[in-house]
Amino acid sequence: MTTHAHPAHSSRRSRTTAVASVAALALALLSACGSDTSTTGTHPGEAVAAGAATAKIPTQDVVSQVTVDPAVRAELPQAVRTRGTLLLGTSPAIGTSALPHAGQAPDGTTVGLDVDLRNAVAKVLGVRWDVQYGTFPTVIPGVQNGRFDVGQDNFGVTKAREQVVDFATYLNDGQSFLGAQGIGLDKVTSLTDLCGHTVATTPGSTFQQILTAGAARCAAVGKSPYRVQYFADTAPIFLGLANGKIDIYFGPTLALKYDALHLPGTTYLGQISSTPVGFVTAKGSRLAKALSDAVNKLVATGDYARIFAKWSVPETRVSRSVVNPTATF
Image 1: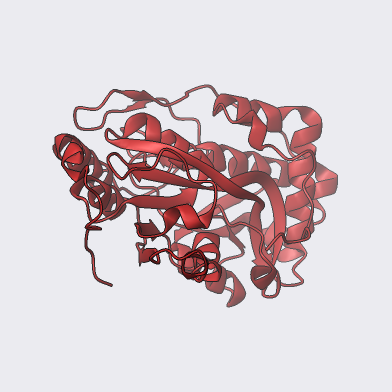
Image 2: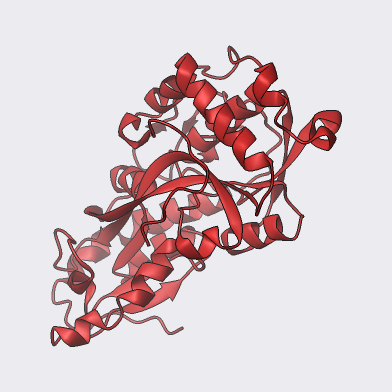
């Protein structure tokens, strides 16, 4: 994949004033990577990013009061109940760039909405998570081949994924755009707004699926095609936004709204679609229903709402968790 700036960007020079600060921030986010040994997800702290404004991380405890539900625990396979753990596959949190889903406190522990939620689910089930790391494209295959019992990586429900794994939903997230300043866009309402631009996203994601499916739309309206680059983590994307090699980042709504507040020289350009997100389990596994019922127990007790209120994203809640909802794409 080549990286190059679009020649039509006449206002490119306006981006140079933000290059140094964004580049430093991206490097700070990358260097903050560490291992996750936490199972509580309630650590205090704040993320300080290379001269940018301090981003406070919520510290309230929304997990410790959750108790086991014997009926839901009984839905787990006997082998899981006996060993008392579930193997969780996920991507490592790097810095604060993926908050509110997951990020790092200054002491290196992993915090975030996803962390609080999965830890509350584990308490309902009376088990602990054994967190194992993969990459976004490898977690679902890891669930399929038995490396992981459960996968969690903000996986949106799609028809293709439901053919190979089961979903237990726990929130709704969207597909949105983060733009660099000076690219001549204030808002993206359709894929044709991307025509002529360089777009970065994650491989093996719903974002890749959407961009691939819409690749012919630019030619249909007489515009130059958009060019897509794929990155497994966000730090190179932020550097690309700063140095003019990337115009737009296509990613999850919650994370991109957070990034727009904390990355100088970037602008949130809007959302074009949304999808339910869930834990993934092996096809036909009893774990999917147990996870879904655990989420619904949290909904009933109010713990679910408290977790989403902590991370200031109540609009992304589901009214009820379901197993394998109808996919929208």
